[in-house]
Length: 355
Image (tube, rainbow, N blue to C red; front, side, top):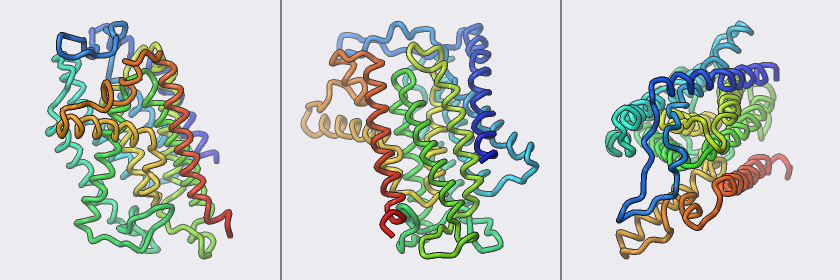
């Protein structure tokens, strides 16, 4: 428990007190994200008040996560684990993809950022590298950081060959990162939802540590590599999001940008793979899944029928155009996300409750 509290606390302090310094630096140089404006053909939600708000706040989140994780290991003088380092590598790698996107939005004032294909290629390179490395580095018990079996609340009998496993991880990482990225359209929405997801992984990985097969052999024990260190990673991510929310809630003084949204999505997907809860990710990332589906439905419907399902996608912009206040949308979407996570944790603990 001290490891978890220290990791989360350090990350929280870095974003809470470091983000204002980043805001000041970005504003000094006029580094703000371009805001989409309505024109004759397309009507966007009214966001003129956000003009001039600096972006790339995700840089503070990444620094906070690294300080929280490595600071904790330095203070307790304990070596980092392969699992923890791989998740952090995934987070940093995707943050670099996000930085390239934010660069175009901020310095070139191109609201769409880099081309979708280029972004997908960058995400794929990072995700494939993570997947291949995650089945290396066996410990003394032969456990690798990830398992090639598809998992729900633990590994299932469906074991994938390496090629399919890499594709599976690529899909999880790409879907989750883009889901968080699509959700990051209102002040605090994505950061608050990501915070809740990381808290869920703190609960899951800590329980897996306490019920590890290395400590207590039993039918319901978990063969998860480095569960305690995964808890430290999840705590650092949660703490970083918590501190960042102080500056990102409405009215936001800074946006996380793709630097933050891609990195947080990668952290959530990486923890799902490492904690053997891959299919449970649909609920732990419930809001991100719903937002992504809304975009798929909108695009699919328009291409097939020429009609739109929503006034605008992603879904939160639909409610904006209906006249809902931004704060109301954010809070209600957080509630929906919390309900999804509650169902996920109920399913995770169901086997223990019924035995």
